[in-house]
Length: 295
Length: 136
Image 1 (cartoon, each protein chain N blue to C red):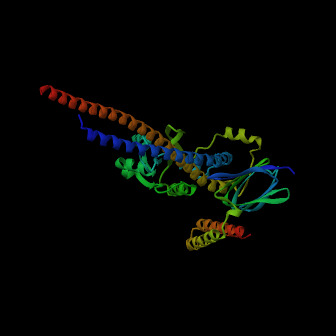
Image 2: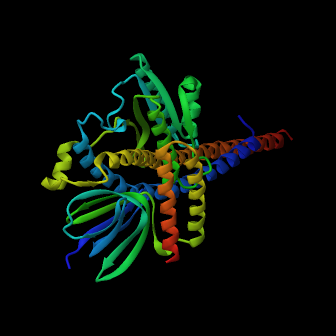
Image 3: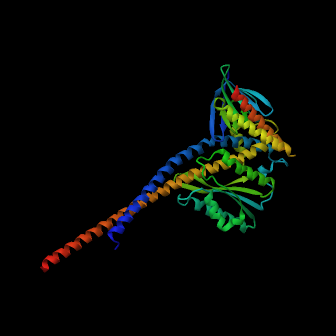
């Protein structure tokens, strides 16, 4: 049985841990709110971009000189995975889930005999994937020290991918990130970036009706050439924001659990502390009484 | 006067969504005035100022640094790379943008890449428009 003093120090240390996890939970909750509203603010742009792209893609589709960003290189040999994770830990299974998901994707692709390249966004995912796939990582980006992730932070990632595509360094590009389903659940998901996934023609026609015959100024190809990189950037921005919101959600849940566990632990320790104290008192009483009887 | 919906969105937020009489849009191949019932068009934008007309007066001026616009008879959607109300532009920051763009252009002009030079030129012109808007 541990002594009273060690129990007391244990209780105090667990108490201060609880204070910290509780504070972290509150911070995560307020950051979550901000991240969510930021993700929501980005939605209208992405929706309208999709609508425009749908209209354009339908009119360009099938032409032999359609931009490579839309149709890919026509091969499937080299895959580029863009893995979005968090920069910080202490958020439950958030980072390991996405990293494990990415790893299983890499494995599946390599089994099919494809070459896989990795571009990591966020520090934790890089740290994890570096152990096994250090030679596959072609680039890394992180947002360490940034209070708020803006569009101008996501754009360089898209530029990098565009440059790699121009240099024919990959054929297929997929984005792997934690989709924000709710505060307590984030789902690792993948989204094809190149070749671009364009909403089905039927959807677009239903939206704009028979008047979907746009005039273009400048020509369709020229607009598409500048619209596609922008769309790439927007999709990455969106994924980064979702992942950021998910990270805060995961941290909030993890810290809530930690706070609860610390509370349970304090209760258990306090009980054994009291029991120990009572045992000591009883022992002393017995000693006194038996001493008195002996006299 | 018939009105139409003008929406202005940047990647970070929805800046404007309201009924207006007319909008002047800085399209890549010249400014265009959009009224209700305009033929459907998709245009690229250069850097410039969008002027919103209501009741015969300019009620809002917003600077956009390039982007796209989708025009339909009853709705116009502007997707801007960056958008700010003109009142919120500071002449100093606009001036430093112009200086930056000029330096970038000089750099690009040295190279043989025509596309890079044109992109730098477009940026420079957009920055100059911004400065002009701030001064006006």
